[in-house]
Image (cartoon, rainbow, N blue to C red; front, side):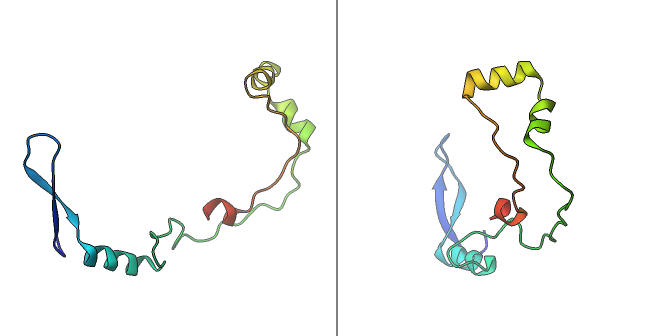
Length: 95
């Protein structure tokens, strides 16, 4: 492996088959990530998605789309109560 590393014993036959990156390889990886002490962001380089601006349906309309049997099961299993409709910003989901 480039950058060297310490050998890690395999769990099976006792042979050393894998190497673990050393501190310099890890430091190089973190420097490339652009985030100090973090991993590369999954959203880095992904273009922003345009959000639809049409009106959201009412809560009653959305609840009416769920079959009554499913609503009863959800209520019985999870005590789930549908109380409002909210659009979640994309940046919150990716962060």
